[in-house]
Length: 262
Image 1 (cartoon, rainbow, N blue to C red):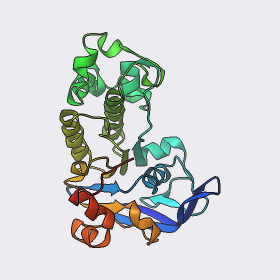
Image 2 (image 1 turned 180 degrees about the horizontal axis):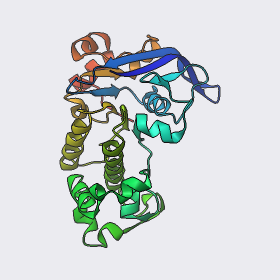
Image 3 (image 1 turned 180 degrees about the vertical axis):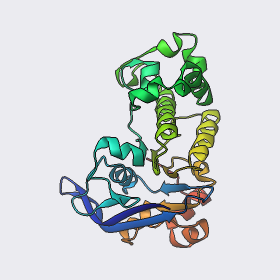
Image 4 (image 1 turned 45 degrees about the vertical axis):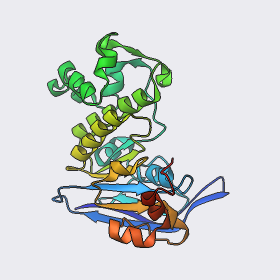
């Protein structure tokens, strides 16, 4: 059983902007469940990215604990946390250096030396995310990436970041994968490719995705709507039928009166 638990938590920015105030979450998913994709939606500024950062150990709530499979993520080091969680944030940027180094960043030396992750595998991965045609005419895997991905477009940075996440998730096989806005800067073809790869990952790991587009979550088992945080302390992943009944924001989305934003 995969499990996520946040005990009643408080989190604010500079003691001013309250995001969580006694909110709690509990989600349990059988490992045998074929599809373990769960979505997160909500208006801008309602706590979606903050929640992902707290679950990923990037932010520590002023009150409350976060447990993944019963393990308090703040009681373990980064190395142990990698076995539990794979994370891609919306603001992730590529590191400076060769393309190959960026892809393999975060993997231990023994993984880098593993023949499974040889150049042929990396090229195949870059083809899957639609990047190889861009880098092959340059210097292939030796192409230099400027600091922060300055020489890449927003969509290229996003695809490269996702390729790195995909590689880490395949290696560590974490209990939980967290992805914030994976397709916000992508064209339709790239979006379909990334969405397909997310579905692959969700067969093996519990996968939470903050979505920029509803179709990214077409096959999600349930969706958490952060617009409900104001009225409810329990952060629940709801089936579509229940979401339609409880969420005015979701009803506005499907009717076209509202659009998903960051």
